[in-house]
Amino acid sequence: MKKISYTILVLSLTLLAACSSNEQSSNNDKSQAATNQTEEDNGKSKDDGEVAVDKGLLSVEVTIPASMVESENTEETIASAKEQGIKEVTENEDGSVTYKMSKSVHKKLMNEIGTSIEETVEETINNEDFVSIKDISHNDSFSKFTVIVDKESYENSMDGFATITLGMSGMIYQIYDGADPEKYSVTISMKDEASGEVFDEIVYPDALDEQ
Image (cartoon, rainbow, N blue to C red; front, side, top):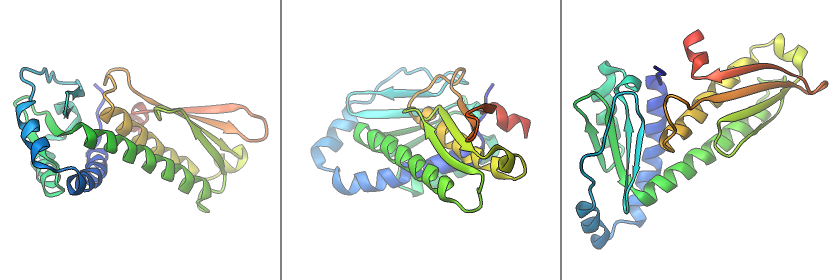
């Protein structure tokens, strides 16, 4: 079973809180609030190991399975989410945690995560500490990254640590977009700038288990 670390979960909560607080200040009229209360869906499955993103008419529920939440941190996770203004946080009997938000908040959340990843990519390219990294490209779902490097410089540096942030960010995006937890992954291809050769591939979350 693929597991997501508590650090990743906290990071995702931070991104979610930013969207939630902005949304609440601009989209909180009484009629929508009343409608949201009547549009709750019943009987949704939250099987262990399954990330569920239920996109209803006016609201979205994102369920993080028990396998991705470290049990000793569950209460802290829920308390932190509520403090940050998330509409509803529910700890389910199977140990999973469900976040409920309006559809507009979920859309904004995905945009915020995407923007954050784009900023991370630019910062990584321009970071003077990662001297071997020349460019980074990715697909729309952030499931594939290509990192162009000076191979010799890369292999004699610690620049590989930059892939951890890219991998975790891509996983967060896919989790909240409803990716199948048994199939989702982030592949980072390391390409030599001079030869164009892809000399290494790093696959997350598998790489987390190898550390």
